[in-house]
Amino acid sequence: MGNSAFTGKSNYSWMEHLTEKERERVMSESTLLTYEKGEAIIKQGTLASQILFVEDGIAKLNFDSGERDATFSFATNGDFVGLMCSFVKKKLEFSAYAITRTTVRMIDREVFEYLIGNNGKFAVYIVKHMSELTNSVVHTLITLSHKNVNGAVATLLLTLSRLYQSNNLQIPFSRDEMADALGYSKESIINTLSAFHKDKIISLSGRQLEIINLSALDLIAEKG
Image (cartoon, rainbow, N blue to C red):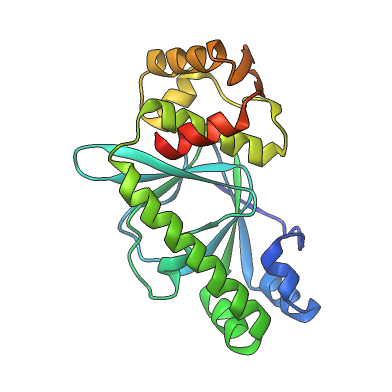
């Protein structure tokens, strides 16, 4: 893990609701940290004391039930991590690990609380965003125990597509690394990718990926 200089980025939807002065305050009262692949960003059971925002890279979100450490979601460019827990100082019920080199902005929670109290448009945006997160969490809790390797792989491929803003991209890690990230065997990952390729959902050559049938992949990620 290492420190990174401030980027001053403001091309995220939540920052569009801030004034220039408010954006400057967010930048001055936050820190950019870079995590290498495999590093823990947050650990399950720790107190949520800051607002975490992914500026670059991909992180996997894991829930350890005691019987299995399961990946239930991913966070990539423009995603908050643990936002709902941060305002009530709750312990985080999941861990986050970098699966590529990942840059995260750590924002002082008090700054967010100030912005919510003094900027109505920003407050409305955050309320709507947290409502969407709540719906997503409920869906995740319902489907988590039924998640199979097909659903996990589909979710990861869709996350990569969102990260690179393209359906034609190069997968940034090996099959072994995919298996480790998702908690399945390498053989299961290879068989799933081969099945997707055979069914013309994707086209895959080495690490070069093209998503051919996006709606089918979406359905697998949702139902898997």
